Length: 97
Image 1 (tube, one colour):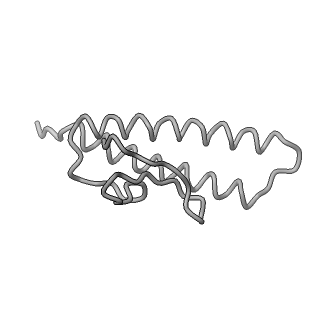
Image 2 (image 1 turned 90 degrees about the vertical axis):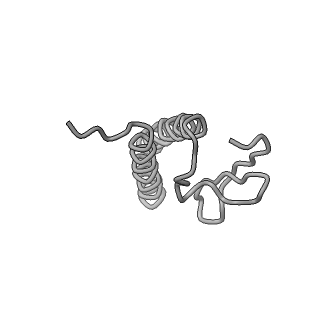
């Protein structure tokens, strides 16, 4: 990963990471990640996935939940799960027996 990383949310609430080159690293997975970068990104995604799960539970437990916000959080959680699965597939080579 780049030493000079900035993290945040865009106007839609989508998380992103920006390297010193200015390239967005959040929404699209970069197929050129080496194993170390992929593992680091995977750990960040897993943490964000757990945080979203806790936020969804807290929102549901707090009286009348905001259904629109709940739907957005769940969609983000699903996108994270898909990106986690893609990174795991990249790290674990397919061995045809």
